[in-house]
Amino acid sequence: MVKETKHTSNKWRDIAVLLITLVVVVLVNYLGAFVFDRFDLTSEKRYTLSETTTESLETLEDIVFVRVYLEGNLPTEFRELKDATREMLDELRAYSDGKLEFEFINPSASSDEEERIEFYKTLTAQGLQYSNIRMRTDDKVSEQIIFPGAIVSYNGGETAVQLLKSQAGATQQEMIESSVQQLEYEFVSAIRKLSTKEAKSIAFIQGHGELDELESADAVASLKEFYNVELVTIDEKISALNGFDAAIIARPDTFISEKDKYIIDQFIMNGGKVLWAIDPVNATMDSLRNSNLTMGLAMEHNLTDQLFKYGVRLNSDLVLDLEALPIPIVTGMVGNQPRQDLFTWYYSPLLLGNEDHPITRSIDRMKTEFVSTLDPVELDNVSYTILLESSGQSRLVKAPTRISFNILREAPQYDLFNSGPHATAVLLEGSFTSVFENRLPKIQANKDLIFKEKSVPTKMIVLTDGDILKNEINRVEQRYYALGYYKYTDQIYGNKEFLMNAMNYLLDDSGLVNVRSKDFKIRLLDQAKIDENRYFYQIVNTALPILIVLLLGGLRIWLRHRKYAQ
Image (cartoon, rainbow, N blue to C red; front, side, top):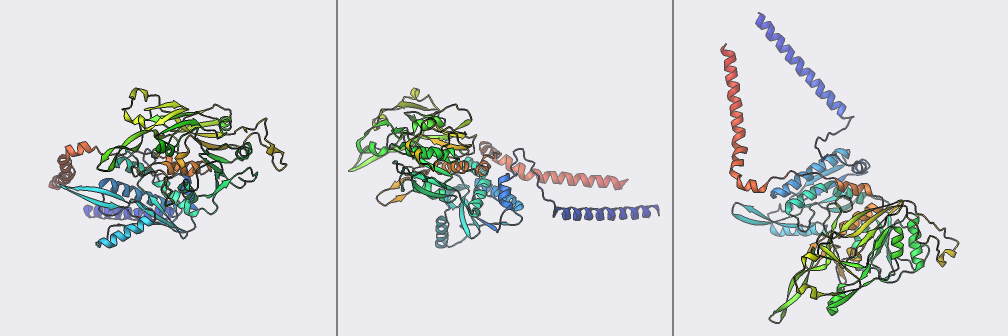
């Protein structure tokens, strides 16, 4: 009787616990409908979205649909990128109040080869770049085309997002790691691009021998995706820069009049932002190819004093770097055809970005052509940050200097290439003093002008090579290539990404640029250990779990047998 009463008591206790558990679960879910929060327990806050991102998601007016083409039989590294992309999209969806949807699509799903090729062409036309990867299965090696990218659709518009970020000299695993870190930035940037209603305006200044329309075509086209961009000739017109938020001055090679300088100066004093891409030394590859010898001479553009007043000294020198672009040189004849080999061209350094600043963090190197150095000038109320530098294996030559391909005839003297790194780009932020302080040009006689001696807080970036913003061109066919593309190696360097980040930062979209500064570690497996101890790890991962389950099962049976045997 006592045993039956105890059994009944335990039964009602179990039922009570079950009912209480169900009530708690229902209550928690009910409260969860009104209270939303997520907890990130990772040390680097990998899953914590930035404030800029959450604001963009909370203000969505329509459904954002993302089609990701990372699906199918992928190598391990690309599966990591796929999983990270899915996790990021899950996070974005959680904060979007149900206004973000996505799907993963296998671009190679069709068994019909012609159908697959047609689909590849469609994705390429939409702006996605494919990767041709080699896969090893046992003793067989096969090639596979994948599209590590996505198409984001919103408000009737579409834009391509390239998820895999290529970097010259980086391993595939390093590129995957860098790409994973940029996922939030890439998706939010795409959403911002599609949702921006009133874009800011940029003046691409012309009229002083700057990069022409074809040479700056890709820079202009890329900026137009986010901003209103116009080619503007100042021509001493007072109102030339009215209504613009920023200006780009890219490689002027003629004397800029004092009146044009004054208009640019007062544009800055009133809060305008400027990206200066100025060559302190005049030297071009075109003149060198035509005569096999050219002179590097100080450029007379009349901007040195103005930039010095703002906080940067341009130096009349050229950087030679062992880490530079290769160029083809004729080394002999094969039959009646010239044979060409690639040689490192020291006058085209591959510049390194400042990893501590969001403008240049995790971007590929910049390709250049005859770049000079600069020195920041200590000024009150103006701070500076070096953005680009040459490598440590670099040296300087002062202008005027002779430039010839003959330098490639002999092996480099490595002991001379040891004075770097040298600064080639700087960000200036603060309140600037007018270069026309205590001296006004005749244009000031116009009564419509109100001269400002000190600027409101603003920003500018100074580069010592205008060719950083110049895209490769084909004059005969009037064609241009992507900014950063180098035709002799078919590589794309970080020039375009630098330009976009720079303008985002200057135009007060730094919240978006700062999303790029997130840094977290992907815990990579040691491939050497995996190859060396492959069978040991396979046994541990397959046999050990089974053994543990058998031991626990045996222990439970023994304990039950002992309990009921008594």
